[in-house]
Length: 473
Image (cartoon, rainbow, N blue to C red; front, side):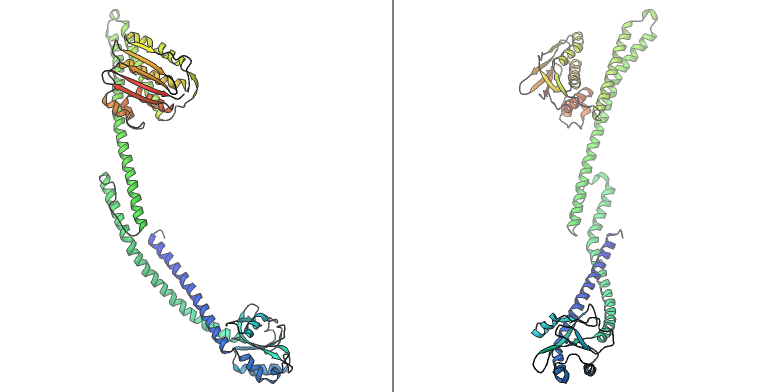
């Protein structure tokens, strides 16, 4: 039952059988209603004629043993009639039946009054031989010679014997009708199934064929062709598949682009790490192969500096990995800006003097920010370190502050400026080809985003580079 067509066939079969059953019940009720109306209409005056031709009934006698003989004579009309005399209150007084046959000694007078008024037929009333059944009847009033109502002559049309024979015949007819109806229903369902299979399978087969071709084509084809017909559901399915394929294709291209950028980043990183490592090993090897008296302690100091540079680059790489994995959390608090800038000046002033670069850091006074001081210090430290790396001897690096409704920190140098590759990489989203910016600038960009700051680079070819940081007050 996992097949779509099998489910459609089962549902159609159940639905058709239910409709056939409902139709049979409806036709049976309609047939019974029509039959009762005809029977009651034909025998409407039967009770009045019986009362007229019988001397005792015509005088209004309702309870007498002699009535049973009259009832027996009336039964010559046929076994489908049951005759009773009723009191004025509807109590059964006399009848011709075996003891215990009458189980309802009281007849409801409401249907009798409706019949005597001439209401529309059929009208059903109480069957004294049943506690639940209602049957059609004929009834007439019984009056004494003075015209006083003494009771009713009540004739059930279609009695117990008639019902038993009718039920036997009806069951036989229903059995044959049910068999014919089931054969008709099964034939209809099979025809409906074949029609649905023809209508639905054609577009589904085309869709399946196109999906197979798409799978075999790989990335050469990214969408399904055209309109399939067969209903809005199949068209909607094809549209959704195309949308999904488009999304997968875009994600594949993005992953391929990121993979290419990461490979490029690893190439740059291997070069950056290889340079201080080669220098370190070179100084150590020179120190070891040189005679002890000719060894220069400066070689060890140069190797030490190369080792420190290598350590710094590895630290930056680990920090970038922590940022990308979301392992760094912001701890914002009200922070004075002066201690951060003073620490930067103490750290970078000796390096600037060694390279003969002027370092000018503005005095912030009592200016305070709501930020994470360690992460902000890391941003400014990376920008200063990057500026010192590219600013030539005799150049200048400055940190300026503009305060007002918006506080802006600017780190400006007189180096060569950002290359075209770095400027293009800066325009990509933060999760794009970020490694092309270099580890230091990648860390700066992610940290400023984490702190809710806006970072804008302004590059002037051969005239320096400026990084503006808009800080939240």
